[in-house]
Length: 267
Ligand SMILES: C[S@@+](CC[C@H](N)C(=O)[O-])C[C@H]1O[C@@H](n2cnc3c(N)ncnc32)[C@H](O)[C@@H]1O
Image (cartoon, rainbow, N blue to C red; front, side, top):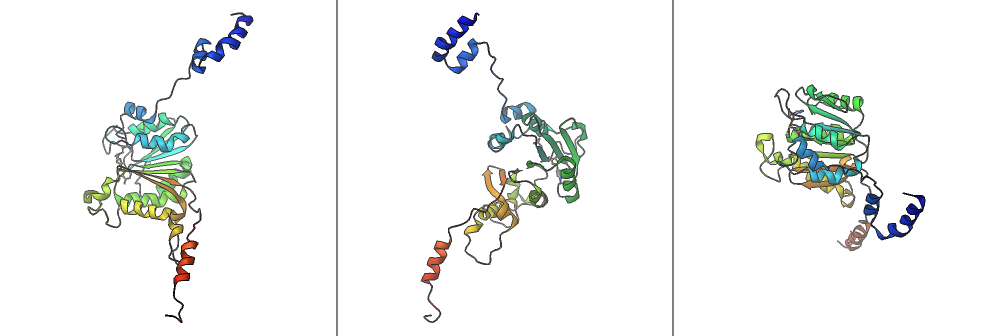
């Protein structure tokens, strides 16, 4: 096309067309759209979609990190003690995060899966030395997924070791949290029983509002001040790490309370 025709088309035709149609007329190729996490999950065969319905929730919390050069640690590779089995979710994460180092930790040897950007480590998820070793070797993860033993005591032990070591903005997910109600996994049938995964999660929810507690002697815990959000879904909890010190307007209530309190001479 001559320069004259090109200039005329830009002046008279372009303003009448949508940007997409103009791009097609110019012969521009549309950038191929990337598959979302659910599509990748369906292709890799992980039960995070189909058996469970976790992937849209993960997409919601992880999409902003997709092109980051981050470390993702998943506890529980899959396949248990079966030779050559497991790794579906690690493959999913590797495809979803094109620049991530994906690390899978399992009590069984899953080294058959090792390749560039995907490494497995054999260890118990409650072993502090092994967990710290993972961070020293690969760097501090931005994303942690606990899909390991699903036993409440293990889930809590792993969280206690890892969570304080994570940076602000980190996402910590705990899967298959239904075991909290299953004695066969170390849980408790009574939903309000103490010591379970869900009891811990409910305390985290209260901790979001710790600055509003009126007890003067209350000492905030580490999670009170470092858990910024608790997202609960069916069988899945997603925690966001970050500063949780926004301040409170409870002084209004306290002032009123003291004004209304009878003086000791009046009592
Ligand atoms: C549900 S599977 C993981 C599935 C996988 N994340 C996926 O979505 O494809 C649980 C895995 O956790 C491992 N596991 C069980 N107890 C563990 C422990 N104490 N420490 C580390 N891994 C453990 C098992 O060997 C099993 O492979």
